[in-house]
Length: 139
Image (cartoon, rainbow, N blue to C red):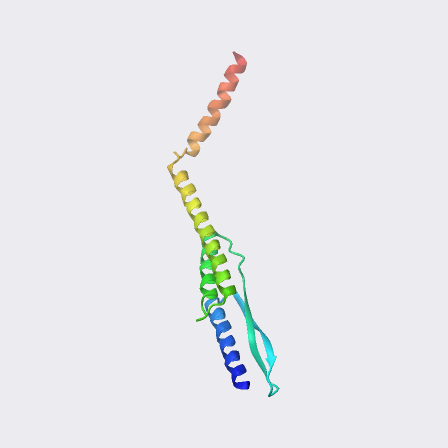
């Protein structure tokens, strides 16, 4: 029984260490669930690593974070169902960030395509409006 608990403990710790290594900067330390063995020792039989999935300040940061979250979730050799669920959520975050980046690029391209009015032309345009209003009021 002790040998079995030791093997489980080693596997659980390796699993959580893989999450932490791949998620460095976005993950917290691992927390474990323990079982007391017949020898009185505590052995990890379950564990979890918290991961910051808040996205980012910009779509580019959110994309980078989503990819890192996905990599962290799938880092262990034997990802659990929960790990796969987190990876699926990260894929959704990744797609949303990519859509936002594409939208920003489209908006930037549209801004580049618009004719630019110089400050001088804007000033004359404003003056033309004032002159036109003055002429209309005197006419």
